[in-house]
Length: 542
Image (tube, rainbow, N blue to C red; front, side, top):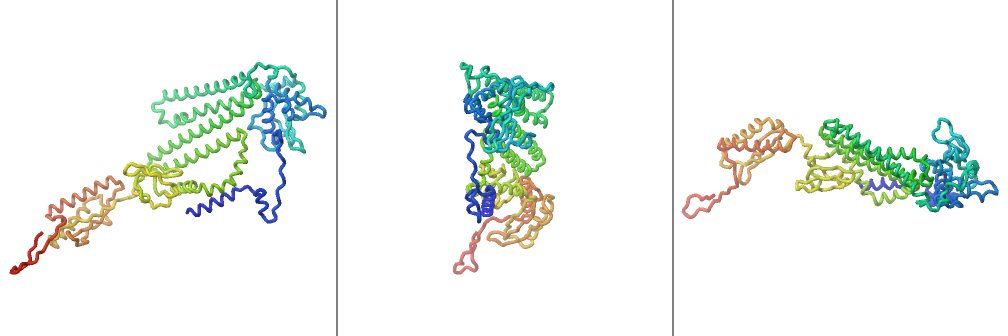
């Protein structure tokens, strides 16, 4: 099994290698051609709409308007005024303009191709109508003005703010509302501290309102229901409402926070990283729901004495929680701007390390699946596994825990567990009753036959003894006794009850033999002495 598992992991690692194999692989293949040289990344990170907007915001936060001007398409001869357009953009966005959130921006070099715009255009936000002379629609509560467009350069493939947006920014008056004109203001990450406090206060206020509402709902259930904790609805609400309060606060803040008249830098940074709280809240919510559903199912399975189903639910619960944590972790990395696709592609090479270094972990995982699927044991079964005898307490993803009669816990990796000999005592439908009764040699043959009939009658009279097989036979002449073997089955599945029946049978056999004056032998010996001269027969002494 282990050799097959190594081959499987090695094949999996090779299959995970990126298609094409890279330069080294191309040189190894017959007739392989070296790959084309990839263009060097842009120094200003304008390769994708997401990276371009993120780098532009970073320049505005540092008030480096010269660098921010590199993200504008300017008419010929007007490149020097690009810094002024960057300041105008910051003013417009600080006074009601909006940018799309980090996750809403395309991270592909081609941008979104199905947004209804030309292939080389990408909308990343909206300028406020009052600053650019646009009138909002009557049915729109938010003043929608000139869209903020990026245009991709055909030759260089970089994204910059389109000329139409740059022209609209020329109507913005520069000199009022800029951070540079207020040197006394305390800045944190390029935004006034009061703007940060305002946004944080809004978020905490939303969370507090929703959390108190959840507490009131739970309190009302506790007051109106006799035994709320036994109700499935109450358990569901108890598990879901606390994390749902946080998730709802994040969603409302993301919808409303983009329209708050505060610094663009503070707004965009907080809205971007508040997504981490959203993923944490979502993972928290689903984890609690998984536990609530799993515990409810396990309680039902235990009442129905379906102990193997309890093991399946336990394993499924742990696997689902592990997958959820991995997904949330990857999503948080993507929110932080870490290129997740590169890391996932690196798993192709890392698969070889997995095959060599993590084979025991995979072997234990496969072993746990085999134990659950084959069902040799269940939680609560009394069994012998190899040299270990005890009660199964848990079948996990990596190992199985057995409580021994000495009250110690033995942990056996599932990879080894599945290959050991397993003797399950809890699956016995009846218990073997096999004893040897030794009678004295002084009994005659007829008395021995009577003793055998007495023992057979005891077995026949007890309804708890199975009819077939059921026998009592003379089997041996041993050193100190004549042995009668009793062979029967106690027709009960419970071990404790079988011990009581075994005791009753032995006492009944003993009392009936005693009543018939048939003695049970005990170790004795007879010594014959050589006769002295003149004696007619040998003497004996016991």
